[in-house]
Length: 113
Length: 112
Image: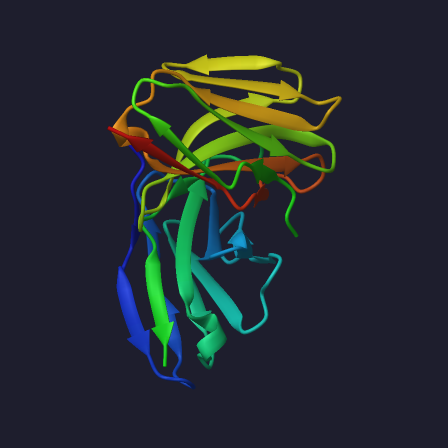
C-alpha cells in the first residue's frame, strides 16, 4: 500500500513565522499535491508537482511556496504565516498524470496565533 | 474553483439502510472519483469512473455517472456504523491532467 506521511499532525505557529510542512511518499509516484481543507470551502489546491524540481500553482498559491528536491518529498512553505492560514493541510500523491487516484496523508492541522 | 457539488450536505440513516449521495459538476470531465474521509484524517480513494462508463461497483458501493446531466451518485448498500464519514466527489476535467477539483462533501452518519 502507498504510504504518504506528513511530518506533523498538529502544529502551532506564531504570525510572521516561516513554516515548513513536510510530506514523503514511498511508492515512487510522479505527482504530488498540497491541498488545504476548510469548513464550507472543501479542498482547495495550493500547489502541485509533476516531477522533481518542477512545480505548478494551484487555485490558491498566494502566501505559499513549495520545494521538490527529491521525488519522494514535497514540502510546503508558508513564508510568513498569517492567521488566515490556519487550516488542515493535506498532502497527496498519484502514480501518473491522468486518471490516477490520489493517495492522501493524514493531514497537518496548523494553527497560526 | 469548485467543480463538484455534493447533495445532500448531511445525511443521517439507520444501520442496514442504503445511503445515496449525489454530485453535480459543470464542465466536461475525463473521470470522476469518490473519496471518503473519517473525522480528522486524510481522504481515502473509493472508486474512479471514467467519462465513457455509466456504472461501477466495488463491494457495497455502486457509482453511476450521467455525463448528459453532468451528475454522479454514490450508493452505499446495507450501511454500517463504520461507514460514518464525509464523502467527496472529485472531477478531473479534460484539460488539467491529474488536477482534481473536489466538492464540499456529504457528511454521512449511520446510527447503530
